[in-house]
Amino acid sequence: MDTELFASRWAAASTRLAQADADALVVRGGSDLFYLTGYHASSMERITAFVARPGSSERPVIFAPQIEVPLVPVAPDLYQVVGWTDDDDPVAMIASEIGSANRVIVSDELWAQHLLGLQAALPDAGFVSLSDSVGGLRSVKNDDEMARLQTVGGLANQVAAQLQAGEIPLVGRTERAIADDITERLLAVGHDTVEFCIVASGPNSASPHHHPGERVVQQGEMVLCDFGGRHNGYCSDITRCVWTGPIPDDVAATWDVLQKAQQAAVDAARPGVTLSDVDEAAREVIADAGFGQRFIHRTGHGIGTEVHEQPYVKPGNDDIVVAGHAFSIEPGIYIDGQWGMRLEDIVVVIDDRAIRCTTTDHRLISVNV
Image (cartoon, rainbow, N blue to C red; front, side, top):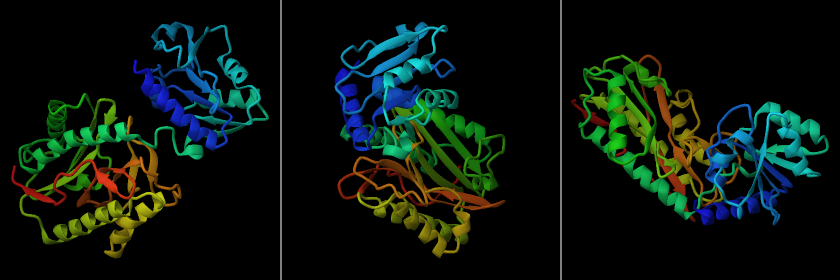
């Protein structure tokens, strides 16, 4: 166990939480717990919780079902472990540890039954989600995390380049078979796991989260491929589109709008602006070209140890972009019954700009495979 890594993560998180006037933190299982401790707790009704007082010298406490205590990494310098049995009331134990806290920050994954129990046990305390208080525990990456995102982005780049080079057969194959092929290639280039793979052809490409099925790819249509995996704990996510055969003029012209919109959002992403400013930069280009109603989702999502995490690049999100943010920029235009297109890269924000982690050709490529 890399105790220095987890100590530094908790120190940074504790500082941010203290600045948000948090008296206590309760993290239930999931990615936030893994981020702080390296422990993957089982997701079930028996709660495992990391409980701490930000800014305090007291060690955090991990409350875990007694049957799972042997699975918790031993790190007495970082935290203490308290087991509970089925005869105990773990919510009461957590409430006792929190004590007289006024402002309690809770992870977004905390189950309602546990939150309601804490509210009943601590009626004078106010409970606020991690997202609303500090924009998520993992939303600001350090240099090592940004390097990992660039590394895993480079792996996804390789498969996207294979797609654009015509090395992945498309015409005459089902979406499912192509998705299986891409999955194998993601593992072959170095991903530890594949988190998802969307292959959407023809009219299916107008469905942003289409599940690849038995439709056979034809000549003269769009093939949208959105895929990502995990390497060394961090995730990739990239979308590239190709057209099987000569690209129609109207499709090429629309892609030009999409590419300009994505570049505008990348250019807008820098410390000091709001996340909604970044979203608006892409949305304005698309709206001015007459496709405003065809851009039907947010411009991006944060990424790190999960494919989707804070921060979210969307209208109305007035949280400020800071150095260390990492998120996708993925505007799309979708014409029901005909085709859809999306162009996605992951960017990391540094002192004065955003840097792409994925750099494969941004044009709509014609392939004959």
